[in-house]
Amino acid sequence: MVALLFPGQGSQKVGMGKALAEAHAIARHTFQEADDALGFSLSMVCFEGPEDALKQTENTQPALLTMGIALWRVLKQEHPEIVVEAAAGHSLGEWTAHVAVGALSFADAVRAVKERGRLMQQAVPVGVGAMKAVLGLPPEKIREICAEIEAQTPGEIVRAANYNTQEQTVISGHTGAVEKAAVALKAAKAMKIVDVPVSAPFHCPLMQPVADGLYQFIAPMTVDRLLAPVVTNVEATPNRDAARVKPLLLEQITAPVRWIEVTQALVGLGITQGYELGPGKVLAGMVKRIDKTLAVRSAEDPASLAKLFEA
Image 1 (tube, one colour):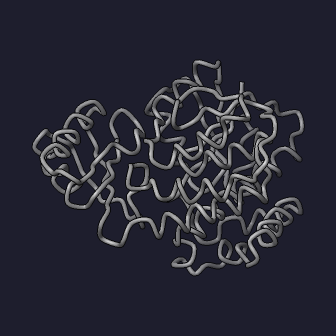
Image 2 (cartoon, rainbow, N blue to C red):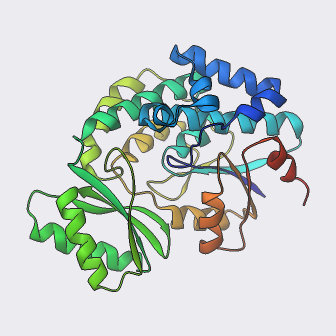
């Protein structure tokens, strides 16, 4: 049984999609569709850069969604026999998953995630928020220490934002509280703490203005029947209800990404193979650390896409 997996922000790189678009007309059409929907050449930003433009959150998010859908369309065209039993995505990747299973139209989604990115860039002034990856401590201990730091710093937030693996959790919040948490986590024998270079403190309550703004933007959007369930970041359970797609995508903005539980839920559905569609192999690496019974193969260009079926 197969699931589609889509990576989130941070996996982008200049040149992504170029070879795919050169090799497959359907991929070229997908990038052109994104350009038309957005009113500027997103494809040129993906293919040629500059990197600073691609790293802008309001460009990164539609770029990754477009890349994921281009790969999925090529895969479907080349292998129409594929039966997808579920889909999931890490943060922004969950939007791509909903397009892949037919819940959201590609044009609607690419416009929505551009707005999502724009709102995220504006939500918190530079320097006010931060994110750090914590390695080598269990998630429960990290949650406990973050709660202690919040109690010591009234009016400031620090929360677990991404439960990536049992050994890696990302924390997010006000810069001061995040720094204090980092000191406490080191004292608790964290193996390593690394700054996450992002434009805002994602997946914590500081992102509430983003959810409020995006609610207005996506309210008119149509959600169609899901052709396969999406295991959501918020609940880490498979959702098949079209009426719940938008509320869960909005809640995701301030809630943590529960990737450990998402992976476990996919295994619980009987999924044995995952296809990671997007630049890099971040999700494959995470899933391998969580549950080796789910074998993930990654594809980002024509050659790696062809290798999905070699085994």
